[in-house]
Length: 487
Image 1 (cartoon, rainbow, N blue to C red):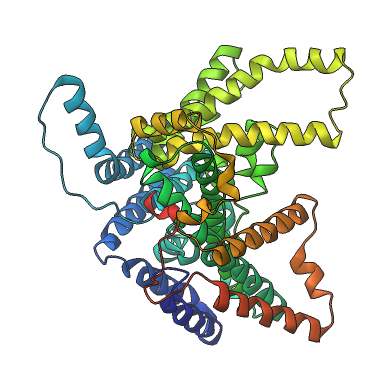
Image 2: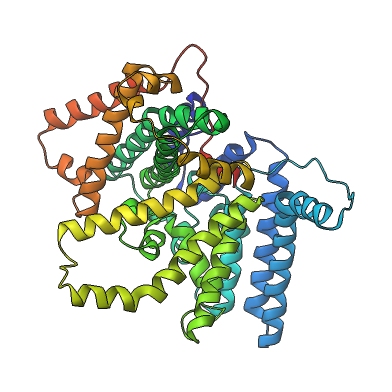
């Protein structure tokens, strides 16, 4: 069931109304049933996997809380990790691992026809984080299995995050009986959902048409075509994924839950490290807390710290997909940060020598452009179906620069008409304005709430009309998956 589908438009109001109408002590059971229905709408068999992950982490965490020695606690944590990571490996990485062995050793080991369950990486990491939190004593083990199952399967963020922590979401599940209906909270959540839908159906869907046209026929495009497609993919993946997070956060807010922020204007970052503190925050912090710090973090030698960073980003690449393109993408982002750390003394010396004002607009803008360009280079590997295609596309960038494509109509051959292209540009402008407001700490929702009622409702109706009129619909339209569903 997609957020941008008519089914969800019916499903969510029904869930919300009954959530606030039924006796409060049954709320968690109702949301649990709704969450499993939501997840099973893709494939009912998927429920067996999420139920297995839920049961093993629930049981192992209880055993951790009851264990009398540290060694026993570690044993139960290891058992939880083993079972859940084995399931994840089987469905997501087994064929990749087999194909790699076949190529390296000229083998002919069989591969299996396995369908990747939607959201398996997200809920597996969320459940494992809970077990580790219990082991660390950061949260008490939940004894009510159904409340814990709701924490793992909470439908707004189930299939594409944010990857929630037990200290946040599970504690809210425990206190959900005290939640009362609040009009202001509902309005705020719905506005967030509308903005997320705008990013998905108006902006991301149009950008995807040009991206797919160039990347699926890369041998026919060079120069600015590849640059435009890569730029638009950077926008597409950002607005597509942040749209899902915004809709999830907004839906949860309507129900009285507060989910963590997942994106914070990442393309305004001045360093690659800052980019990763602003991009997919729930995953970045998960790797920081459960992998980077246990590896030693920055409390070790300089080169060991660099190795820790590289390990984390290579694993992050693998988390995103079972393909060497993702490994290279993750490795590149790790290498960027290592090079940045090594060059920091040189950059400091240059700044001091030439008396550069690092807080000037020009210097900040230069840094943002450099970081955005580096991130875009890595996105080529993320989007390309293979490393060879990615390398070919990079070489194609420098093959021919025909600047006249912007004026001779060639750009209209990428799938969008002149009108559709204008809508895309206007949507990008709206995104830029909203991002600038967010970057400067200005809440558009809060500002809107301060206005007169006639103005607010005019804005609400206008926003809905924009979705209906300019959403990428048509005679053959069908709601498309969010990009991160494949991870």
